[in-house]
Length: 585
Image (cartoon, rainbow, N blue to C red; front, top):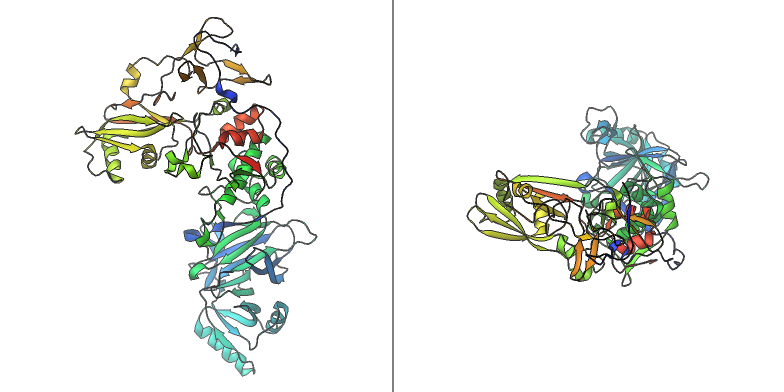
């Protein structure tokens, strides 16, 4: 299709496309050097996902070190093993076999021939070191060192029943070896050779909250990696039975290695480097901004999309690693603090303020304000969606969130008000008895699990009414045109930029959406292809929208589009997070 270039003026409208508003290509000020890597604690298995046993395999290096992490997250070594394949289990009766698709230790596998028992025999005396306790224990079959409440002991054997332990105790006594019977502990953790009942080490913090620390051993100073549940991790691991429960497993590693595990799971390695760098800074900032959110489970951030996706070294590649290395230590800063840099897949043309989406105090997040996004459309992302629901079901859902007086069915929906970025702010529902119920958009999105906050409505009426005409304007003084199909603009650096469906122009009365030629306007003129109100079709309402996610902060596809247009990661971040700077904390 032939390109039409917009330069300066228009006859019908004074054109000033907001494609580069606040986003010129001026060189950024140099940033100071990094202040060094920080340590972060990532929850891998916790809560309902806590484990009864977890396998570890040293992939680079040989064996593991045992100890604990102090209050500054520094590893304190107590002992080690040359074994490359170990498992950490609860000090209970656990059995080895296939469970939920994995070979592991679990209390339910009682038919297994491999059992690690919860009863042990403890030799007399306290030892000064791991090596001393290990030497004493090794004089007996099944002997192993233990660290209980801050002291080393030597223990012998493991038995699934008390009677079995008592019988073994009697046999040793007949040889002149006197031992004390030790049973399970609600905080005890045992390390075994994977696939066997051979205990290498036992640890019990008696509930003081340190947990067992396990780190892979490096042979020649190389960075170690560990396999666990088919994922490869840097750093070490902490195993803790919080309040006597199952094993809470935390990956403890450097912040930069952590970010290298986030970026390729949040963005594709094939995306432009500047977009990946923006993602690296956003991920690093978000991780450092969470504060005490996960303090009950003794870690800083969780591994999944409830926080941000982290799967160890899975999907990591040269581009994503380079993005992290080239932004090492950099974070988004607002008013001297690390900004909470929320991000999402796409916004459909406009981001949204945190107060609209979550009802947060906007003054606490001045950098998370909604704005028209003129970039995302250039990513050619097919992010349109629809959601249909009957009037009766809609009424039932409204009653389910507390609107108990809603009638048997909803007969009409209307956008009561819009946000500054043109997304629905409040929605009015009319029921079969004529009563109106106006509620905030966030409750509508949550109630219906809509994919984004940029939506409108469609109905039979939408198909019968004429399309809203897009504003007409002149290109180079020629015949006025309408819509943005095939329309391009030249920015201040001479770059050719496609004009998206959500492009705006400045008029005598403010700003107006150009829209696409032949299209209908959505809620409040948002260009979604529907109407701002609906009476339903055959008792069914259809929501139509664009975008995927909560619309707060950075659009990942918008970042991709900006990078493809030549913008730097600093310009991407400063567009999506209003008023932030990028630096070191």
